[in-house]
Length: 267
Image (tube, rainbow, N blue to C red; front, side):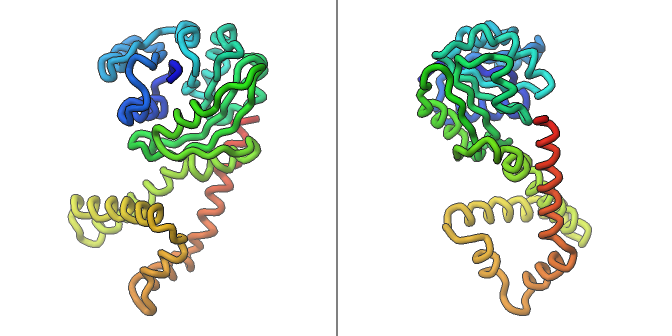
């Protein structure tokens, strides 16, 4: 496996790092990270037993695949700092939200391969889904390494970059929607008298079980929902209340809002 350089070890950066190491995809000697904050740099080095450098340039120089995982507002400065090291043998993988391939190319040139990725926080438990778009550089980079890199912490799918704003709204932000629903179920259970520990266990395990069944059964969400919905029963009563409250329309509006915000960030 080529050497991976991780620029930024925030929530997503650390989630990917944990996924790579815990899955066994990367050995600690095959990764070098960059973190500008002294205390955090030491903590990451101690926690994962990897080499953590202070500057992006030094990290990019050592790595074959450079993963840009800094905040979007910091990406321009970082890309300018590493542009010199991005030759045709290297690949830049960017997870910076709203940062288009075209805007990356303006800062680093045409030599290196560029892969724009939208993962999600579920990389922490090796259950992310990552959509990615590719722009080859001056020479054809072996994308098998990139697919394996993304697949090490979940599923990966290649898409046209034009879909990235919608994908950001669906799967990038998506885990928060399910967390919000789980939070609401927990609160409702407590409101109606269940103790907090029981409410948390029931709501969270139900979310996990539903997701597992949906993935493993091969059935559609509609078919599984109907399988739970006995005529005249409790589920039908609850779903009817959600429908009367405009639940599906609210989800559509939320996705639209997130998609438009992603577009604004890109522009």
